[in-house]
Image (cartoon, rainbow, N blue to C red):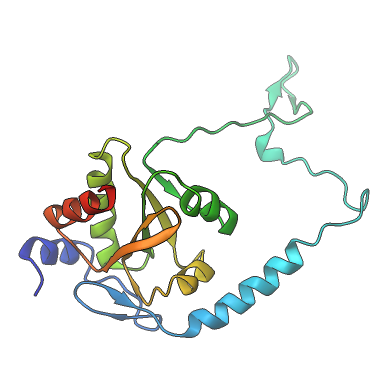
Length: 201
């Protein structure tokens, strides 16, 4: 059974929003096939190739022209100064963040002193687009007592396999590096609040 407001939200998303060749979709969640294991092997191979560092002096330093600031001289010519500008970024949300890679997950989730809810999701998953903002809203209401990590299974297949994620959205509750609770599919705000309160203890 799907609540009427959730069904309307799915309709606005254009249905379940899951690619038929990549997953089998239910009303609450999206299943994906065992091809993830093959993709994991490919990712690890590519990562091993990319991570090989060249010997010192083999590759010259690269400067991105996109990061440079062009300036106009009086004659109308465009001159690009060197070195390139340094761009600094700041984290907008203190309670919700996107996982960048395995070490980032280890540092910000497994080693976190604060309880963490981990939202495994995918861009092609309709139910994920409903649950994600709803869960973010409820986490923000806890005023820092719990944080939320977002993991895109297409970008981090190895994490999805390691934590036995077979459908999305899957949400794990983690404390001191251990999974203490989990659920799969869409939940309403009352259910999410109870889930978070239980994690916070």
